Length: 109
Image (cartoon, rainbow, N blue to C red; front, side, top):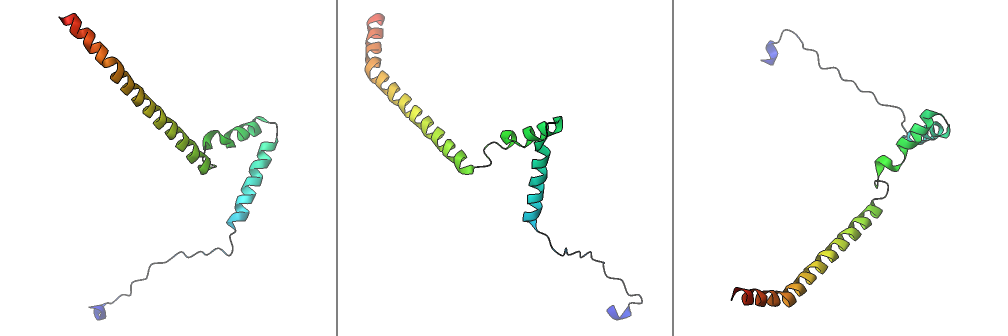
C-alpha cells in the first residue's frame, strides 16, 4: 500500500525552543528585591503590599515543624482531658450510683 501513494504527506512541525540559560535562584532573588522595594514606601500601595505579603495568608506554612509540634501538643491535651473525664465519671458512678439506687428503691417501696 505504501508503494501506491501518489502524494507525500508533510510531517508535523514541532516547536522546539530551548532557552540558552535560566537561573531560577536569580529570578527569585529579583522578585523578592522588587517586593521589598514596593513595601518600603509610605504610600497606600506600599501599605497594602506589606499587609498582603505578611503572614496573614500564609499562617503556619513557613515552619511546618512548629505547626506539627502545636498539633501534637493540642492532641495530647485533648487525650488527657478525655482520660480525666472518664476517670471522674467512673469515680462518680462507683461512689454515688449505689447511693442513688438505694434512695430510689426506698422511695419506690
